[in-house]
Every structure is written in structure tokens, then in C-alpha cells.
Length: 347
Length: 202
Image (cartoon, rainbow over the protein chains, first blue to last red):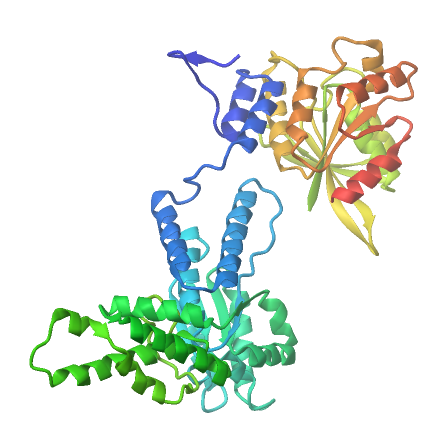
């Protein structure tokens, strides 16, 4: 049956080898079918396309995702997406019919709910999976895309698209492109974008982000867009509890610690904030609170003669008081806010 | 385009079935694309009578290359095109003729890519317990291989012959769990079921 070499069975391992053995008369067609079956039922080889490095990069990206606080529905969707892409690739290898992989997305959610952070992770994930060659993230918004005179918009939009090729183009407050009606240049930007999405199907993923209601309206006035962005991810607001955990992590990363009293105070502030404004369920609010507290602690300590290491680390309830006295209202997000080093969702 | 492949042991009537099925679907003239294992390809158009006379025969291994027919099935309001692939017969054991072995390898390669597998068995030969043409090892292996696939239909051919009904019963017993369609390729009988099956899977 099978050739035996040095006591171990030698078998053809790939489809081509099986067929070669069959035509060479080393196996019968029945055996060839049996080998086919084994090939198909065998677990997918881990080093599919890419090997160790890519597997590792994927694991890192997924770990980073898992590390984010809250966002459970988002994480689940991303995992689904990852599995979908992986399986479609496997299917393509087996030459089974595959779903077209339109991976353009809409992120809907309030500011500071982790949209940019997740987009960045997605870029890296797709890069690790070989969907995108580079996987970097280019952030832009209306002001970056829309020009001042006719023709300027297409030019500027294309420029951003060129920068994003091989990665993710993240358009924040995308609904603003539809503002201003028919004659607005925003429409030109959308048209350019749609064309680029077709032209660079395999090397660009576009993510439109914005407030839930506004994005809903935006997609409803541009019916063609909805079908081009089949994946829609809702980013829920953080609960006070999640915000508290985010605050703790931010403190840790800055080598500060909340005293028990400060912790309690912060919790209360967060709960109040949640009740008072609809846009407060976000990590940026927390970052502002913490950074403000850090400054107030500095003011409190600077006049002291003797300071222990512990004093320098601890944020007291008094430090938070001032921050809380500030009305917890958020400005509309401004472009160019930096990503919290925490990897926590805040821009 | 979806591909539908006919496989089976030599001389079970694969080519006859392919041609008659084409007639059944309303093709008057068969334009057949041939592909040899060696890589030579050519196309030839036959009218149906000629096709049957030229491409089929009572000796095994008449067909030694892939023969593809483009057919259409009604689908919804329109039609859906698919490719019906006729193949060289599969034998048990190792065939002495290298040409036939290559043709079998070619068949197997095509099976892996096919969306629908029509696995043909000569029901009359099974009824007669013919040692050469009855169910063989390769048939069982094909059935096991195809277990993982959706579009797999056993076609019991030559139902016009007297021993065939016994053969059909035996085939049903041997391949429990797989759908079996009894047909007579020569007389174009039982084609409705096959057409419905192919229609569902392309």
C-alpha cells in the first residue's frame, strides 16, 4: 500500500502529491480519495500563510483588544470578524466559494467610547491576518477632506486615501460630510471615497465613525453607502463601573494611586456625571478628571516641606473635589486628540 | 460558474448520461471542451446523434479526458449556467496503463473543485454481481469522501436492464444515508430528480 521508508509510513501530504502518486501508480484511486478525505478533515495547519510572526502579531492584537475595559459587544463582533476572515481564507484555499470580503465599517457611538482605539487594533489584526499589507491607521475628518474650491476636495480626499492605502482610513464625525446639502463639497468627498473603495478593494478598509443618531441619518440620506459598509458596530457608553476601572488603570499607568476616599468620591462623580449628561459615558471624561486631580495634588503638595514617596503617589479625595466642581460637560471632540497611552479608549 | 462532475467506474455510462442529460435540458448541439491530462485542450461541436456514437462505447475507458459541457438550468426567473464535467472512469487497484492513471488523477483533481458530484453506479452490473463493474473499493471511498459535501448524489444507471432493480436495492443498502437517483441514461428516464438535485446545488 504505502511505501515504507525506515519504518515510518511515507504519505503524500498535499493534493498535488496525491495526484502525482496516483498517476505514478503508487496508490489506487480509492486510496487517493481516502487521502483527500484525511487532508480535508485534518485540522488546519497553524502556519497557514505567514507562519509564526503573523500568528504572534495576531495574538498580540487580540490580546490588546481583550485588554480593553468593557466594550463586550464590540469585542465579540471583532472576534466574529476575525473568525469570518480566517474561515473565508481557508475556504478560498480549498477553492470553495467565498463571500466577498467587504470589510468597510461604520462605528457608531459617543465620543470617547473607544472607536479609534478599536480601529487601530483592527488595522493591526487585519495586517497580521494578511488582509491588509500595512495595517496602519490614518485619521481624518471633514476638514481634512473637504477643499475650498471645485476639484480641490477630490484632490485632498485622494491624498488621504493614498496615505491610507494598505491600511485603515478612519473618518471621524463622518456624518459632517453630508452637512450643507447638495452643493456642499462633502458630497464630492463621499463620491471620491466610494470610487477609491472600489479601486483599492484589497488594500484599503474605510471606517466611518460618529455619533449614533447622526450616523444613522447620514447613512439614510446616502443609501448607496449603507450597502458599501456592511459592518456596523455600536459602541455603547461605558457604565460608571467600567469608567471607574478605566480611571484606576489610568492612575496605575501614571504611577498614581487613588486613596480609598478618593475612590469613593470618583465613583460618585461618575455616577452623577452619567445622570446629568448623555455624552458623559466615555473615557475622555475620566481622563480629564484624573489629569485635573493630578494637577491639584501637585498644588497641594508643592508647599509641603517633607514629602514621602507615598504622598507623591496618592490622590486624595480633596484633589478630586475640584475636578468634580467643574461641570461635567464635554466639548465636541476636536480632531487631533491623542490616543491615551493607556490603550484605554480615549482619544 | 458552478461545476457539476460525473464520476464512477469505467463503463457505467457517464458519457452517455452527460450527453443525454444535455439533450434533456434542451441542447440540440453539444459543444464539448476536451481537456487531456497532458494539457492538450480542444473543442468540438457535435450534433447529439454523432456525439453519442463518437463518444460512448461498450468497452471500458472510452473517455480518457475531461469533457466539459456548458448547460443551463432555469433558476428563478432566469437561467443559471453550469458546467457538466464528464470524466474518465475510476478503477480499483493500480491500473497498468499510465495514460489511464493520469486521466484518473485528472478526474480526482476535478472532483476536489466540483460543487456537485454525481457518482454513477451501474445498477444492472450490481444486480448481476458483476465482479468488474459492480461496486468497488473506489466507490466506497468516493462516498466517504463526499460525506462532507452537500452536492453529492448517487446515480444508479442502466435501470432499463432487468437485473437493475435488484442492483438498486443493493446500492441503497450499501450507501445508506446518501440520496440515490435511479436513471436510465440511454432512455433519458429518471432525469427529473437529477435535474432538481443539480438545480438545488448550483
